[in-house]
Length: 340
Image (tube, rainbow, N blue to C red; front, top):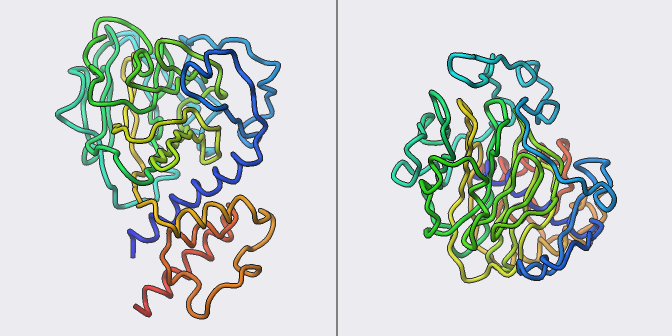
């Protein structure tokens, strides 16, 4: 029961992202877009009212933690204090908003990480530079992301500041400990990785471009790796940012994260995978075609029987991205499971 409900919530955000990608305005960036292997980059208006076509001022790292970008409205996400002895900020209180899942397909790999990392919460939470920072620490997920659809969310559980804190993907060739004595944006520094910085910059091949607004403490960064279409899509606070890369078919990646900030931390709050079936592809297409303002279950000529007898992943595609319909979906899933 918990596993089906978990996946239904996860794929609802992915389907919403598919819908928003179809409606997003395209932003034609410099010629390096083609060099990176991008057909185009797309941005969603849902994340911010910022006009990316005119506001292309390069973001800069901040010595002060980013606030006001949290998924929730908890006061604790805006409360930080500086510890001069430890040369870093630390969070005053914990926040568990958005952490609904109880089962996970993968966590962080204890054997594939920098020395300046510490794992907890069943290897789902990683703490970087627990005492002080002298460089860049990185870690990768315990599961190789090969064929299928892969979606995961990483929550910023500490103040976000410094040279860089990043979320992304990379191959097994990425040296996670290479820059342990250098402050840098590790993910995307080579051809084997892509990284989204908290400053909003997207990194790959040692180059960077504006991609989103900043994220900070309490932000939830979602990542969807579609190995069928070969796309990498990012989400912020469960709203689609855009497609970051294309032509990623026939490659094997790992989820990755890195940080230069002392006493910083991130937590995997969702990780799930699904096969790329014909049913999945049909539902993805339907999500693009059907209006987002109606209950799609009422307008589709579904076959007789329980609405979600075909499985929760496909059913999620037929719902608009709203809490009301998400709850309706979970209710139907429960009824189907009781009948099985």
